Amino acid sequence: MTTRKTVFVDTSLCTGCKACSVACKAWNDLPAEENKLIKGYQSQVETTSKTWTYVRFVEKYENNKMNFMMLKLQCFHCKDPACMKACSSEAIYQTESGYTLINQDKCIGCGYCAANCPWEIPKVDPDLNKTFKCTGCIDRVENNLKPACVSTCQPGALHFGERKEMIQVAKARLAEVKKEHPKAQLYGDKAMGGTTYLYLLLDDPKVYEMPVDPSTPVSLTLWKDIIHPLGGIAAGAAAIAIAGGVIANAARGNYRAKREAKNTDTDSDQGISS
Ligand code: SF4
Ligand code: SF4
Ligand code: SF4
Image 1 (cartoon, helix red, strand yellow):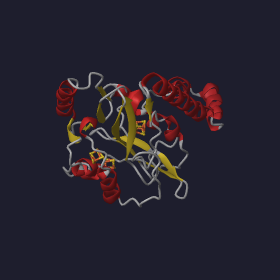
Image 2 (spheres, rainbow, N blue to C red):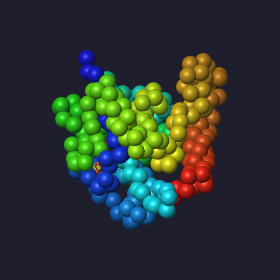
Image 3 (tube, rainbow, N blue to C red):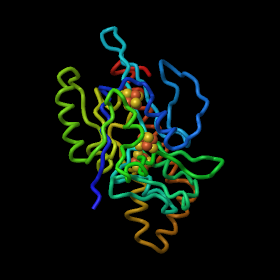
């Protein structure tokens, strides 16, 4: 039996070199995209159907000093993924090794997965009408190779291995890093059932503009776990509501509201800009 794998992202060692993003494009044969420098070293604000991982730069001001907080982002490969629950075509599935993948033959590009993902990771390619995101380099992992992003990271910010081992490595690093950064914490060890990408953050997730408590939208849980199994008229009525985009819009609204609130808190409470 295959055991669950994990990528440990140690943000304390990330230099923001973006080599992970380049390696991802090279291995997965993804084309370059035109972008511009938005602020600092930030040239991309979200994943796209052609860029499955990017580095977020956050400027943190403390005692009249600015520090960059850097974070590589991609699909977290949740153990209990909202995207899979949301997919109306059953195109999303999971592997024993801990990856959440999209079967492109089944994907119809409806975008419900993207609307319900707490991090808005999957993106629909409007030309192909298919949705794309990080595959965890499953083709490499199944051939005993590390994911391309992990292999290329020179400062040692990315580690790959068995989940149990990675959790031990993460805990040991946390104990070490906490001496200098008392707010340091692990992110992803419990969220969404425990994500395959596990992070060591130097500060509160809000500082990194990440949801503090990522979760599956209540409307989706209601539909999938309660209304849909009822079948018949109740399920039919709910299906019409979904077809009208009610659930997807609610999920989007929730996410935006949370993100806006988070940014407001972050700006006012902690003197952060990004
Ligand atoms: S390759 Fe490693 S150090 Fe460079 S940006 Fe990616 S995670 Fe950070
Ligand atoms: S991060 Fe989003 S897209 Fe990735 S598995 Fe979780 S819910 Fe799905
Ligand atoms: S695991 Fe593979 S597909 Fe995912 S971000 Fe890393 S290089 Fe890209």
